[in-house]
Amino acid sequence: MQDPRVNEAGNTQHCDTRPERKLGFWMCTALVVGNTIGIGIFLLPASLAPYGYSAMLGWVITVFGCLAMARVFARLARDMPSADGPYGYIRGTLGEIPAFVAMWSYWIATWITNAAIAIGVVGYLDTLFPALREVPAAVQAVSLLWLFVLINLLGVRAGGRVQIVTTVLKLLPMLSVAGLGIWLLLTHPSSYTENLPTEPVSLAPLMAASTIALFAMLGFESAAVPADRVRDPGWTIPRATMVGTMITAVIYLVVSSVPLLLIPAAELAQSKAPFSDLLDRLVGGGYGRALSLFVVISGLGALNGWVLLVGELTRTIACNGGLPASFSRSNRFGAPALALVATGALASAMILMNYSKSLVQGFTFITTVVTAANLPLYLCCALALLVLWRRGQRPANSDMLVLAVPGLGYVTFAFIGLGSEPFGWAIVLAAAGLPVYALLRLRNGRVSPLLPPAAKP
Image (cartoon, rainbow, N blue to C red):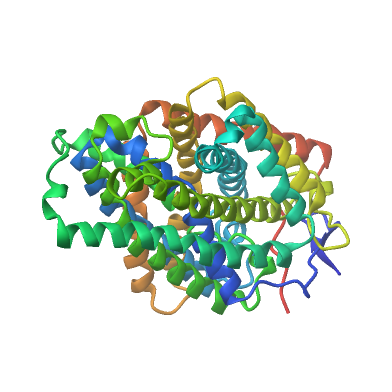
């Protein structure tokens, strides 16, 4: 089935909708949890180790900031159910150019995220199967990426089923780490004071740690991005977004402090697999390797979810004219084949470029770039809710203001916390899309590359 979208010039562009292939509540919730709980939580303790207590406080700030933004996305989905996700939310309130810039930056962030996840999985995979250390890490990471490109070429529901299974399995290592932390607190409380961080809490490291931790929470917006593929989006997306984000927040707050308190900072900062090292250190050799199995499953589930997401996102941008129309075409399974292959190639290039750095250094750098590229989307969606409040066209307008202001405050905090270099990257990535915008306008003559959202029955 095709969805005709009429542009300003009266021309029609056709995009496949395949209404029979829809994501329900549980698949959307699994997408949120699965994309958010990926490999970041298992590697970030190493990146956060130098920040001491600021890292733990930064986690709290990040969790509450992301809950505020999740409520923004949930409210926009409820009040604009006919919009095609964040693209439609921003375009319908702020206009075409802000929508294109925000989604272009986010699009870049999604395929870079796939590179970061694949890199992170390899660190634990080599712990689980030491023989793989003979295989170049870049080859392992690229192979994993293309495995899930192939799975998602079978259609959105194939990727969704994989997401549900891996989301359930990935909660097991989280529960095991939380259980270990609680057991040590009850039986050996002194273990929490043996390796206390020495770095004092101060504003600069607090903001830096909060921004690094934000990478692990990216993905709470996942249910809203493929809105065209969601069953009853006005009901499903808000509930899946909030339920998925709250589940993730509770898990993160419980487990994030365990390695930061139990492993010396200098040792933790050099670890390729912090949670495996934690179990080996406290329980005995071999247990960390067993945990690595579930960490790998967690990372693979996130990789599957983000591959699914970037394919649907690329389709949405192409349907709206922000990328060539060929990226919106579906194969016989309803999957955006060219979009998946092209973004897989881009992520592969990023993986190969990364391996000039150490795993932790490369992972930390990629996470800051991804976080910077996500923030324009969050900023524009918070502003979109503020615009709806100013228009006074919806009920409970004061509630919109209460939701929009904390979201704007947190995004501003995150932008400042990024520092000058990642902030510069955010500007460069956003600006890189403007020539594409101009080229498509020139190529299509009077046709606007950002089309109005299609009406839904």
